[in-house]
Picture 1 (tube, rainbow, N blue to C red):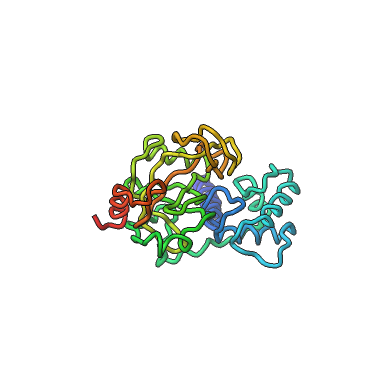
Picture 2 (tube, rainbow, N blue to C red; picture 1 turned 90 degrees about the horizontal axis):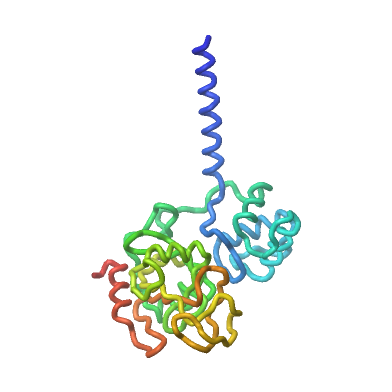
Length: 280
């Protein structure tokens, strides 16, 4: 009799455990920890659809752009459920959406032919795409949020493209991303490191430094300020992403991109890009 009871208990436990696994695997997997105004990503459309179900998103169609309409809809949702009202979709807001069963059960498309990395799936090399003709304004645009992978360690972090003409100027999306970057570089550093940039459906070979410059986190973006980071002195405050543990921007270079100061290609960056593309 005892044996039968034990078998029954074990069976029930296994069924409960299995149902928990199915539930966890069935949740929609968001790529980023937070979503906010200015971002473009397929996950934004999922958020808009959830808000539409809840009656707080009133635009006639959903898109992949997190603009002022989405920000206001998120604020209305947060106010409705007594959450922190900031217009940013983060852990608390996504958690409430899951609780209300507003999010899809199925996972996003993970076609094996895609170059996009999720979890442990990582590309070995990136494409050496020309900054001027193939990347700038096409694969990488101002306002894009990019997943970046350090070529040597495999560690990943997220940045937002906030400025840049001769190359991309980016900022860590969150304070956690800044901490990951500091772990990789051993602090803030001008060291050029090969990286892989996940942009839309491509993995692009790039080179990056981790020395924030030309900005102050506490001051308003675009304001003329003194004592900008990196010894840049007085000038336009290049710091859009706030409370991310970083003052200003860091450099992200692609094939044939150049320095702002003299319009010339940086040999160390270009060498790192070739390494990330498997050409060295």
